[in-house]
Length: 283
Ligand code: PAF
Image (cartoon, rainbow, N blue to C red; front, side, top):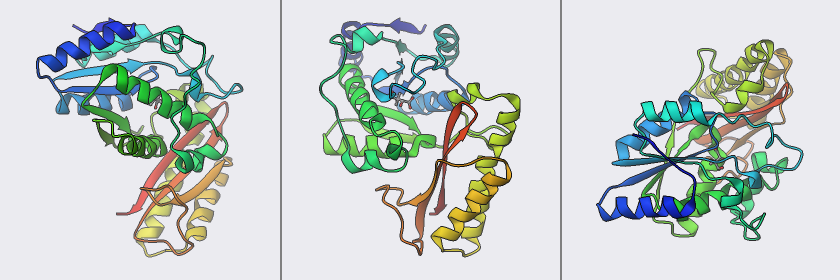
């Protein structure tokens, strides 16, 4: 039976009990509005641990005032049902007041330069909000393992670095992106798309695949691959916020002549949604 916990004290008591029994605990942090991508994270967590906790918290700290915090989809009853089917042990769903009783957190965890790369250029406070809440969740749940999606590659890389820099005793695992038949990456924000926008958004994946194919055929010129992605998006009437090729481990921009390992990453506004996706080129 899946237990719903909404206070920090009860979550801590549960975790202490699990650890005393010698159980390995895995945490899947989410903001809810769960889809098959999240369930893939839960399945991976289940492979790694006897006990699985899923947190559901739409974290205000990672949204700028003009962003979609207030309209972000919230569907706790549906999420609980899906997680019960996956035999999740605990859903930790605290209120904003429970997580930030003083209204804000004066303390920020910041993975400096990485937080300013890619999405950080237009969302300068976003990743500090993510790392701050994930650090809090790690302290509260005390997991042995935490599972994140590779769709949010920048987030995953930043959290790995935070865990390493701050010596959290947590193993961070990444799970490959789950896609629709069109290739569109599953995202809770896909709910914002009209049917026509949804169809057009399939071009995001096609643009990445085209670039990867060209890379595999030997193209190593960074800007030519970026132009190809932009052109494919343009054909579908989409204008990307960014198209970048970076080192997958550091998120630093790759040189004009690409190395054997590189990450192609895009952010594309489609209607009211801002969609992100990425693909590894080479290894
Ligand atoms: O990826 C998300 O859903 C969020 O950024 C996370 C990791 C749950 C932190 O709020």
